[in-house]
Structure formats: C-alpha cells, structure tokens
Amino acid sequence: METYKNQRRDRLGDVIGDYLTDENTTVGEFYVELRAEIQIWIDYHRGFLKKAEEMQTIINGHKPPSEFGLGEK
Image (cartoon, rainbow, N blue to C red; front, side):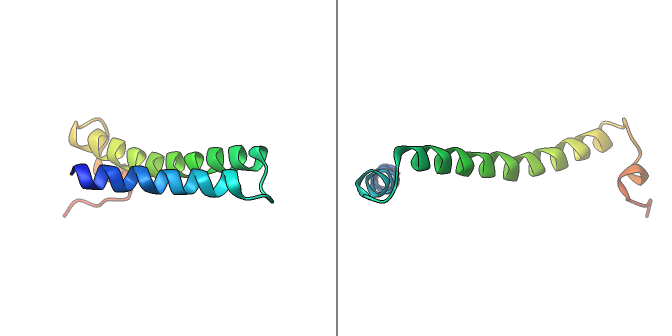
C-alpha cells in the first residue's frame, strides 16, 4: 500500500511539474484546468449519488418502484 501511495504522489508531482515547467502554459491555465478536472469528478460522482439515493427511497418504501420506471415482477 505504501508503494501505491508513493507512486500516486510521484504522478501528482509529475503533473504539477509538467504544468509549472511548460513555458507555454500560464498559472491561470493551470488553475482553470485543475478546477475543471475537479468539477468533472464531482459531476461524475453526483450521478452515482443520485442513483443510490433513488434506490434508498425505494428500499425505505417512500416511493413505489413504478415511479422510477420499474414494474412489479
């Protein structure tokens, strides 16, 4: 596990170094791209959160499965 953590840290360092040493990339571009990437991850996981919350609503009996396009079988 420690090896993976070190490898992950090294990859992060490589990315940061790539941005900071690229003469054609500004600090502003680095900032904007970092924020955009974080937003992509938020949006990606938000979709799964919504799905899990819908399943919890059905399991708790607050809405029938038919409201989510599920038929009784």
